[in-house]
Length: 412
Image 1 (cartoon, rainbow, N blue to C red):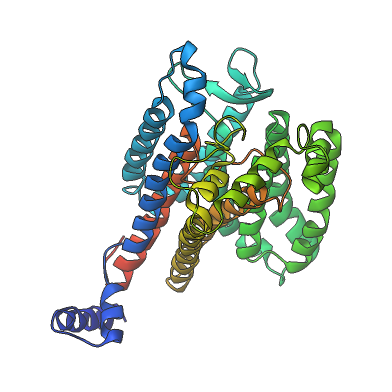
Image 2: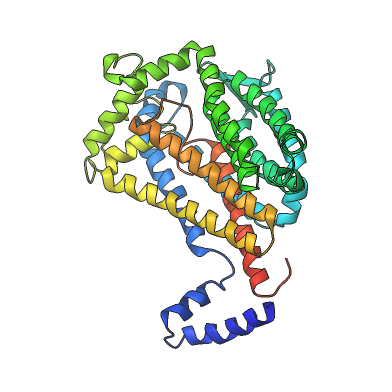
């Protein structure tokens, strides 16, 4: 079969240089060594993020000029984070997928220990009442961002190792005790640490990653349905346990009832969307970023994009993310056809991570979901998130690269 594919490629590639048909050109593109469109999608999002973070953060930097900040303070730091992320992605892209599979449990253990460390006084750093960072003098790292990536790899490797116990052919008790329960226990422990920070948004993303991968890995639908019914109850209990989460929920239900307190962030985000209209007020011309909209360069960056670039700018951002998710799905499906279960689940897991976090961030900015502290992947200011996103994209490109090599008859 591989020999036939190589022969087909040798016939198609020369023909594309002499005006071949559309099907021939499509087949030739499939023989490229990597997914060019996916790579460019990530680079465009990163570039747009650099521009918009600079635009959204100038006012905040000038307001803190007394502490030594300059107008370009956040631009320089964000550009540095992007540079580190691209360097880390370059290294990650050279690591074989089989090695990622072997390292997955160890990486998750390291992430789990970092979540513990961030809660230790003197190690963890508190910002705005949340202890989510570990200070490295020059920069702060946020362990929960790297735990998201570790959760993708660990859940994928777990689903492959426990595949025999996850399917409906097994007795339900066997599936529950030997397939589902171990990962459930690990995720409960991880979730407890994340809630103690507190970081409710990261908890939602990590839970979605882990159990989404289990379902894609063949988890008995009866167990998944039971879990789907329990998760809302568990999340409701977590919200009730902290009064500030209930305040966010009430502010989300009617932000205009208390626009100067509970509904402050959302009301100003909605004002930014309203001012942007179709084409925006122009790059750099946002009013809401002038210290009206809190976290304009992080959690609410999309609101600034909406105000300055309008409906067209927001549509561009969402389109880029939709294409990235489609390519993650297609790469995972190709890996399945090549009988590479870990690679397939890892590709889908990365798509789940980016998709769920993007959906939540966009929903929060548009007032569709309650306010949560989640950044927009590849765009928002934040070193740990940018580096983790870049590494995840590099792993996805590596999976695609190995798929293409196998289709051309080469070993990986």
